[in-house]
Every structure is written in C-alpha cells, then in structure tokens.
Image 1 (cartoon, rainbow over the protein chains, first blue to last red):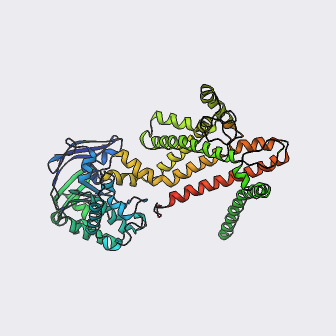
Image 2 (image 1 turned 180 degrees about the vertical axis):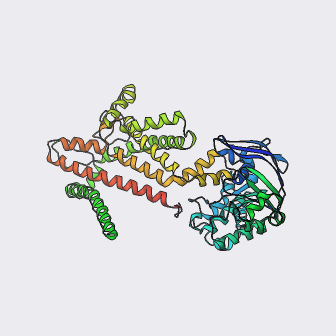
Image 3 (image 1 turned 45 degrees about the vertical axis):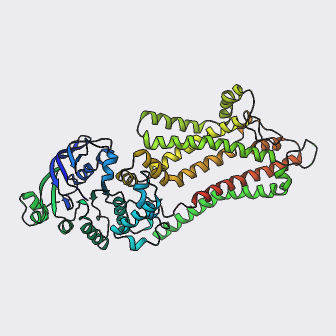
Length: 252
Length: 278
C-alpha cells in the first residue's frame, strides 16, 4: 500500500544554482499527484529529491525534510533503502539493454541478492500484469532483449521493473513525453489503475494528462511551488494569477 | 552535382577499404603459399631435430606460446579491466585517476624490447633463471594499457540513463557498476582484450631475455620456454633451407592460432548474451 509524503522547507542546489526554494507540501497516499510547470522550473529536481536520486550528482545539495510514511528519508535511512521503497520511472525508457525482458523485471530483486526462482517467476508475472505488458511479452520473456521492444512497451517494462521491488511510492518523471499518443494513453490507463495501490507522483508537461490522471496538482515556477490544490480547482479556478496564465497558455 | 559527390565519396571509401584489406590478404596468401607445405602432423607433435637432421616440428613453441599467453592473459586482463573500471567509475576526475591514465598511455608507448629488459632485471635476475613465468609477466604487462583504456572508453559509452535505472532500483553503486555498467559494455571490453591478446601473441622482443627459448617440450613456469615468434626469429635467421621452411610454417600457425583464439572467445561470449543492445 502507498504512504503519504510530507515535504517541509525543501531546498535544492546544483552547484550555486538554487533550483528548489522552500517547497512545503503534503502528497496524499494512494492518489496520483501531478506536478506541472515550464521547463527548468524544478519539478524534476523535486521528484529526484523524493528518492534521493538528486544527490547522485556530485555537485548537488539538499536541505529540509522529506517524510515518506513514518521515516524521514534524509535522517533515518540510506539512499539505497529509500530507493527500494520509492520507485522511479524516467522520461526516456531505459531498460537494461543486455538483459532479457524477464531479467529486466527481476533485476531490482536479483541485484539485491534475491534468488528464489519460483518467487521471482511469480513476481515477474505479477509485475508485468500490473504494467499491462504481460499479454504482449509472455511468450518471449527470456528470449527477447528489453531493448527489442517498442518505446511504449519499453516504458511499461520500466514500470514493471519499478513495481517488482514492491515500492510504496512511484515517481514518474514525464513518463509519456517520448511516446506516441496510443502508448501515452496506455500509460495513463495504467496510472489510473496503479494509484489504488501506490502513491504516484507524476511530472508532466501535458496539462490534459495532469487533468486526466491526478487528483492533486502542483504548479512549479522558477524553483518555487506557486500553488498546490485539487486538480479540479487548479484547472478551473486557480487562486494565483501565474497559475492561471500558465494553464491558459499565456506563457511556458 | 549532389549525386556526383555521393558517388565520389562512396568510391573513395571503397578504394580506402580495398587499400586496407590488400596487405592483409597479401600477407596471408603469401604465408599460406610458403608455409602450408611444411605443415604436417609432425609439425604439431614433434620438437625440433638437431641441425642437419631432417624433420622435426614446433610442438615446443606451440605449447610454449599457449602457456605464455595464458599467463599473460591471467595477469593483463584482470589488471587492465580493474584499472579501466577504476578510471571510468570510481576515480573519475580525480588526480590519481589522471595519473594512472597518463601512465597507461606512456606504458603503451614503451618499446617491447625495453619491457623485456625491465622484466629481466625485475623477475629473471632475482629468480636466477629465464622462465616461462617471466615471459608471461612481460607480455601481461604489455596487455594492461590496451585493456585498461578500452575498458574505460567502453564504460564511458554506457548511457547515463542505464546507470540511473540501476540506482533508482535501490541497487548499491558498486553492484550497479559490476552487474549493469560493465555487463552493458562487455562486448567492447572483450574486443579490447582480444586486441591486446593478438598483439602480444606476436611479440618477440620481450621474450628474448625472459622466456629465452627452449628446444624441448616444456610447460613448466619455472623453466625457459619456447614461443612461436621466438622460434620463427631464430629459424628465419638461420642459414638452413629446411629451417626457413619451418619458420614459414610457424608464422602461418601463429596467425591461425590467433584467429582461432579470437573466434573462440567471440563465439563463447556471444552465446547467451542477448542481441538487440544498441
């Protein structure tokens, strides 16, 4: 089951560039939350702070607190432990090119030392079913490379890979921006199904997408969170003038 | 005009390719013409006969080259790959890594005869005798820079997205490097190892003061040992017509063994590894 995320006074830097400034918000459990805003506004940096991927860049720095469920991820745990609880799907599908479909899905478990074949088989099947890819690949699980699939299938494979380690939160950084409309709608259907079991945070440039999949939406601008409210409110009656300008297409 | 340029460029690249292939084919054809006649079963299973007697083979040199290259690979491949991993993954951007990279490049340029002399004073003199081991060390160290630098280059070519995918799954960095990055780069790393292997397989100079040569069949690491290039060198310099013929046969066998070893490694490593990697 998903857990909620409490972010308090989060600041992030790349070198001397202050990319996130005093972000405070609460992301509800078992819902989809969308983050919108123009390029470079800090929304990707924000999700990367939620699983401590931000700090894999040597010049990056973070202050503030992020509580996921009952733990403070910057105080109580190591980055690798956090990343197992907080899965991530990236903008471009990035399956491991040398691995079969099966091994791609099982990789998170295998690389952490999990070897029970029977359990792995079950988890791989369940994860691929959850990511709506099972029917398309079940006959070539070990025969085909993850890289041989189409872009949309690869992205669903990456979602299955993230689900296989049984996370509580799923971060998606523009998961459909490199995909065609049909694949995009499959990913959106998937988000719709998954949000009953996981807390989903999705970064998107596509405002219709945010409106379709998310209950809550946050609008980022120049490293600040301008407005965070129910998706309906953001798109019909935003409180802030800048939000209104952005969603009506006056800039960005 | 555009088609004309297109044709011209195509024609030029074909011409360049032919120019590259010609010497290779010429050498091989010439070797077969001169060497094939001296190849028979005796060549592979007998040791050389004393001067004046007919017959004999190069079994000692074939076995010796095998032993030397095994020792060389056992030293050069792990050291080179380990160094390359350090340069690309763990030491990236540090002064220490830059120093290692510079040293590897210099080592690559050290003449092979100098390598032989260095190993002579570092291994042969303390050990008190010429040995297969010292020859293997000399060849192994010559493999290191090539293996190290290709490993580094190949690892740096692995897309950042693949590393992020592994880290995003909560895989520790060392595990991600060994199981994901190195594995993704492995076809290129294997090519680097094969290049280094093929290069030292034909080296003569570093063996003159180390492996030294041995007219008897030996596989002991503690004794002097024969090698195909060494024996070719000695036989080709000799005044005897039948030794010249054997030298040609030896050269042909050396080339064939290298081709065989490279193909075998390619075959073994391509099985089970899935295709479709970009």
